[in-house]
Length: 351
Image (cartoon, rainbow, N blue to C red):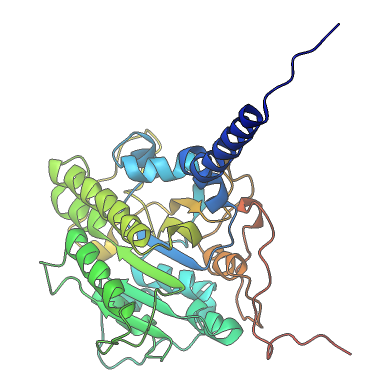
């Protein structure tokens, strides 16, 4: 029985076609369906920390903020994280930054009223620990002048404050300013900023929802518009990181200092007091993480405190140093244990 032989020229053409399709698949398949998984398995080099006020977990879950809802569904989330009690703006932000309870950092309710005579908060913050452990830089954008005294002037922190005295300072304006800031610090021209690249941590404070809710009501159209404005701003900041080519190395955290008004036992909302400082806000807050090295579609099972945010940031960046806080890393949210990137002068191995 004879068998037909394939002509050499036809064999070469077949081999050439197989090589072509193999090369095509290596180039295009990651672009079609593999980019997200590859990016998510990368250790974070940058973190965006969005700090909200006056937004309940239910508002995100019910679709009032579709972009935040997408981050929660694609990443990890707990809807029952806890802020301090009572969740006042300045003490709560101090607890987030220091990883300490009020009795330790001593930023009490008195700090809710700005006093120019006060000095800066003395307790070390996550900004200090990041610099000490790895020489990491931070960019801070605050929309409340009262928070100014929580961020000491340091060469590794570039902070901007815009708030109550500047009503034109909106989430949209903050987004545009952040985009301009990132464009300038990555241009190698300096422009007078302290940073010379995309910061390792970008903290963005967006309190518009609580301001509008207190002034116009939590069921008002203006409150709904404020939620959409904040939601759009978060998406624009993420898009800016994508344009800079660093989104695949970026982790996003979204949480709050407080949420909406406390509900009464019957399910109603307590009346809004005329004094913002006496407003009773809920200490139950959302805590969402998305992006580099973050698990997908994962509900967080452990209890989460606002104070745990700082340690989680350090853990994500692979940084270790001596700390004086009560913060604990939420390690279950990561796909793999981050590589240690602490500088050589920290935590030397004992001989």
